[in-house]
Length: 349
Image 1: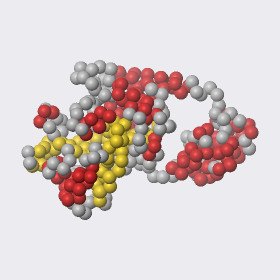
Image 2 (image 1 turned 90 degrees about the vertical axis):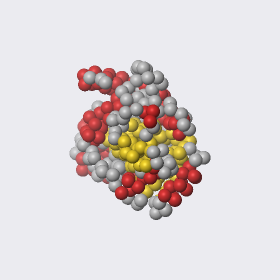
Image 3 (image 1 turned 180 degrees about the vertical axis):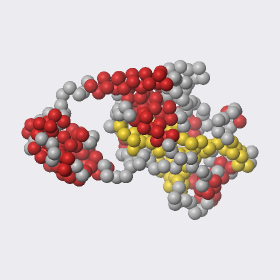
Image 4 (image 1 turned 30 degrees about the vertical axis):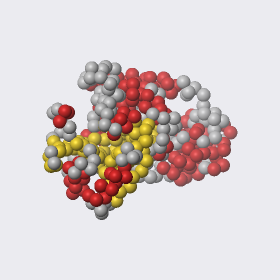
């Protein structure tokens, strides 16, 4: 376990490395996307986002000081004011018309799971505050009934979703599950040190799984569900990443395999809380991920997620339907990391 001082130094170094990586591309101003103005002008975007009055307070000199566009002198005062305002609120004005349109479309949506950008230094504190301030959730009737999935041998585990997922683009979205929030902080700093950029979200879940006798003593209490089976229920979280490009998923996989996956009991050089089988998913096919089926089970107000190999999913769906015909069941394709895919096949690492 790191001391507080060592942990702070670790984060500081990660941020410095990340800043150095970003600085290599920060010397030249980005070119203004004149094509984007014909589709979604800066003024139109500012109007839609609700910042028109702020934009109109900027003098030309102030807007020029804020703007990073290369041909900003060619913009009218109104467009320059709008461009500067968009940059202040983090709009991707240098990434093209579609990126700006997506930003405008997503900005007003209520996304309680979104926390911020990976490179924001305050993200480390905010994610811990979010986690520690979340209330303890008592098992609902739905949660209690779900235990029969394990009691009857239908499944060996599931996640009960207790807070919403962020509204991220599926093709750039990776979901990473764990139980230790300090692991999350170190992982965020690790990814920043690797030069990755992403929007970050956090959602909570209750993870339920069949206890195996060879695991030894656990910190969680065991729940006897009958049939010589005992259940573990643990409060966990999913970290959500929306990377800049889908190709960044490959870099994410490489970072996890190198620094967050345990290969031996005495292994060093890993971040805190590295698991034998890290658990993360991609909502679209990507290099380093293997095909699986995610099955959403809902009573109309709560949802549990189960994972299965594609060839095993139909039988699992049928068994769940027989357990409670009133539940809605929605299987969909998902792609999991290879270590977890081996777990689904019975492996341990």
